[in-house]
Amino acid sequence: MLVAPDVDRFQTDVPWDRAGDWPADVRKAATALVSVHSGYQSSGWIRDFSHDVWRAFVSFAPYAYGSDVWTKDMKLLAEVNDEGTSLTVRVLPEQLPEFEDLVHGTRVVPLHEWNRAKDS
Image (cartoon, rainbow, N blue to C red; front, side, top):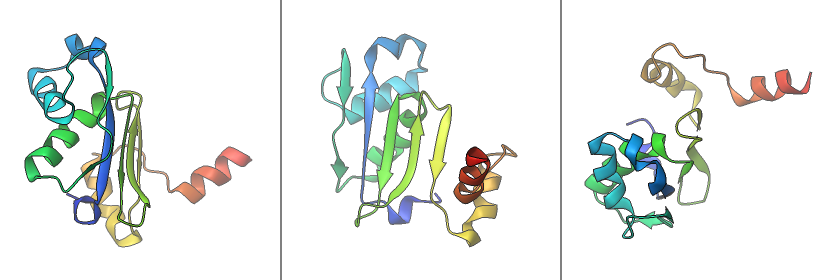
């Protein structure tokens, strides 16, 4: 996994009112992330996590309204928002080809280019 070696903590919301639209494995992942399985829940910071909890987060994040992953020094590594319609990932230039392979040809715009285009 591209960012996994640098992950120190992560968090997500779990909007249980949307659970009817989730596949069974995503509902199972959500139950691993929060202890209350109704209403709108937040995982809070998850640190010192097992591989299984990380996999649950990765499985569930595209179904959340907001999920984010941070380094130990609180640099944002990845953010998935609005049920997977928005993705931000911090990668080093040498990691960009691997990331582009992971997103299967979806247009990848480096932040400095996005900001320049948005401001013009």
